Length: 252
Image (cartoon, rainbow, N blue to C red; front, side):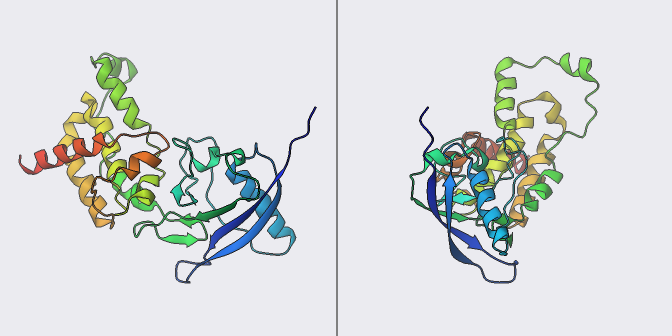
């Protein structure tokens, strides 16, 4: 059986000690990397090498490493989550890169996502937006009662499609305006499609949009970069829906 050829990469990684200290790109070399390793596993190998040399490891976020949680927020070669569409950084494999390739790794860049350290950013702005209405607070009853509410399959499917949003923030990182419109519109839309979300419909969209603006996110100018990098393929049509909902609320 033919043995696997291991790869070597040159990495240009953003290093920043704290939010108040200016960061910079630092070059590293990582060797003996299997093509079957994920991007985060490759960073693990680099960190093991750094620790063995008595150096400070690179800080980066991860949790499930299964493309579910949205924690792995990295800009790889200028693209949020890397060059593979509908893929999180933790599910990006090194076989998608060339042996000897130079790879740049940066944190998500946005005023509302301040850098904490190295590749880790503070995305709690999303939590504050959700706290303003990204939930159903009315009593929906137990499961049998909920299932008794007739919902057309088309509407249920649409609600499930937008509910796939994992809140990773790639849409913000990719947008030239650092807009959170795709994220907020997904959270607004998933309840707009379902009758359980209608009692708080107007209040929800007004409060979430106002909180989005208060957090310092930019406005959407229809570049569609957000949809292009979304690991779940959330459609920009949801932004139009959010705008209709919002203006409908303002106009009564």
